[in-house]
Image: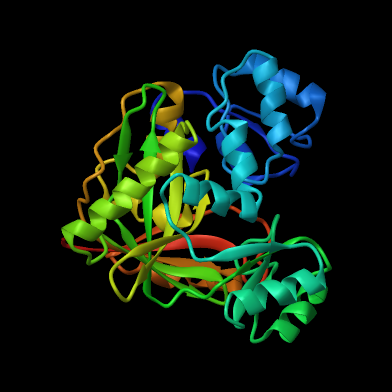
Length: 337
């Protein structure tokens, strides 16, 4: 979708992706099939491109540093990826930037996990510090004893232990910053997760002006604090008292921003390309109300029926294999504002 957006703006895209038949390769000028850290591939990418960006936050930060060393601008930069790749570093950064999170602690042993759970009130969410997405690499523990067992079940790897958030709903804000330091945020989305996977986003969310402003302020602090260039997603918990806590940041275009393709003056993909290419950012106001629904695994077989609904706009990813829980497409259902 980033490659398609770049093409609409008259830009050629070169993809570096280890998958031989990756979806983006079919809509790009060239595909380099190699590991993200392959030095020959990085040298070729640097030679061909005027700027390099990422769509996947688990690209090694060292690969971006290598590209910068080869003289090509990279956006977002390696620091943003490195922070987002470690959940303890991420939450430490967020709190230092003035973007509050739930209470948390790092743990490197089962005993430390149990002690952290006791300090945080007993019931906690435990996640591996690195990797894991869509609910993978995490589990709830109801007690300190259970926390020790969860640590072992997660492979005995370093973890973050988080206090639960008594939230009334999940929100997210998609925001962009360009090389000139201009920041623009889209209206908030309200999100529903099932089994750790985003199922639906509805935007614009029904929030008051104060909540929207608080979310935009958080987004600005995050982007400025990271010296970030590009689009990022910031996932938020709205607590019962109306305050916001940051759950996590995604240094890339974000699933909960897919509604912008059919409901905003500029979609998040074009906005990202504008930002990294050095263009002015586009307008972000909503032009329609959208409910975005992810199609997982075999649900992609519903596409013909959904195509018969005039309110639906289909966005299919071109993945060759439908697996349980795998995001294969999304549908945007449009209604008036």
